[in-house]
Image (cartoon, rainbow over all chains, first blue to last red):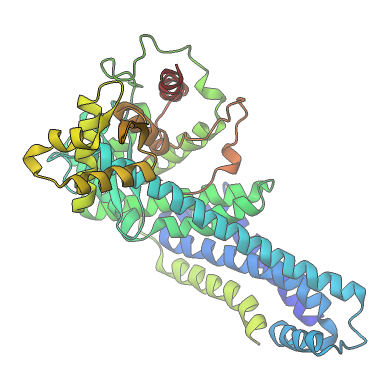
Length: 323
Length: 135
């Protein structure tokens, strides 16, 4: 039972950490925004620890009678199972719990695998299309340019990452702003922020009905943007990046290039406000701009405390599985 | 860009810019790329690869294949922009939103600035394109 209690304690600690990092008005959020990298590490620890504990809790309950750490108990159980001599203390109830743990493990692994596969497929298709229609432009060194009047700037991550901007972006931004945006995108590529987000996209896939998973995803996505902003502001002044963000936020929709799309008149307007996702993007933009305009140095002590917390969160369940 | 990627692009440019409605044969594509001095089999390989990626469609005519772009250049740009603006697959054909299901971070974006209208227009462009192909 003591091992089950460990897993429950880990889940509670994860919940508390997530709560501290997201609760509006608590200092945790302000701190996370000051030091996005440490906050991202915390979130990774929370994600990993929650996943392991969700597997470990039913397992440890089912294997309680072995009275050894869950990893060792699991190995003994497997040996007993295939040896055909299960101890009398492992009844149907225990077997159901063990099966539950195994099912959760399979679900999480399956969701991660499917997430990786569909991402890789989408990226390959995107890369193939880019190779056919995007062009180099001296105005955006190191990036590909898509001939489209809307503003877009993004990074296609992978082993050979590719930064892409639209022609609309080139028109929208001046030289310093564009340079800041390109640095921001290169930071995403260098630090493999796609992999940082992957566990959370997998969780969203495994538990599509769980709102807290989507909240966690949004938080990490925002922190990743802030981290890339930090990398960009190291190379450029804060001003151009904030200006670029504001220009993006207020860019007018220009989606009918001279007859290219074959549309005479744009279709009827749909209320943009009804799209909740855009609302989220808006608050994200606001937070990022505020942050760039009022920079603060991350307090080292709190960063160290957060990293310590992250290490503790992960080591609890891992030690039980390895023990 | 790899040499093969470069060739694929050159071949697509020929198909987009010079293709009559019926499409072009391998020989016609090779002739259009005369200045590159490509072997017939090279052009055929490139077209094969493009067909494998669903970038071109082909139709048998007598003993030769005729190749056509699967979509216009503008439609591909529109597809990429839908990806870039995180709108692809946001709405099912029956209008049901499935944003909650679509969380795979294939791209990392600078900022989303798109309005509802913009999304509509991009989607309409793709729908028109599909209709033109069928009609």
